[in-house]
Length: 266
Image 1: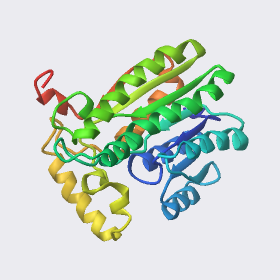
Image 2: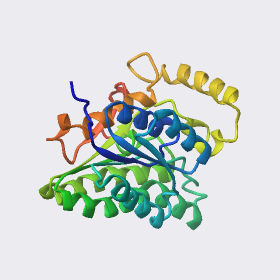
Image 3: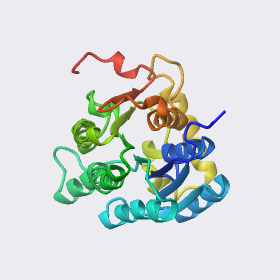
Image 4: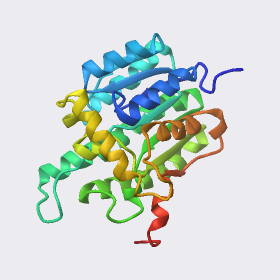
């Protein structure tokens, strides 16, 4: 039986930990060649080594357009194609309504929205030339419900969800599908400062924080468990595979039913 991503080429940003790492592992297991992008060189190289010859780590800062372009160029030069781009990189925002600075705004929007915009910009021509492709943008339930994220984080993710639909309508005629995933209460280091903070802590400290977080999140959804990074990885696998070939301009909410606990529009 053939694997679901046999001979496909994928680029995953924010791929050295959490959702990105889980997705890279799953995509390789399903036959894809994966370029893992991220800022943590040690974690990226260790992950690529563990996943084998079909995984390649490339250092990248998605707040730099040149780095994003280099990822797409690497996929083409190394593997001859780009079938899937997972714009997954992200992290906590900065500032509140009354404290936000121009620097906070630029940082948050460049990281959470700009990385998606420029990822799609550079992936589109490559996919157009092939006549097919899949772009997946990591959004959030914060885009559709209040009080699920920070001030700028919420705004940026709402923009990601909407621009995904716009891009899908523009790229669909070229055989390119563009969808987003909106994770709910997923147990990742973003809850204690993201990978930037997690990388400074010991494995034991991160493990303790993770177990405490899982117990807390299990109480926040109708399903009595925390969401896991692999839950989002499997959603991305569906969207990237031929099984999702008629899914476009869609926001796939993976939240254990959490958003149904809130009033519509609240």
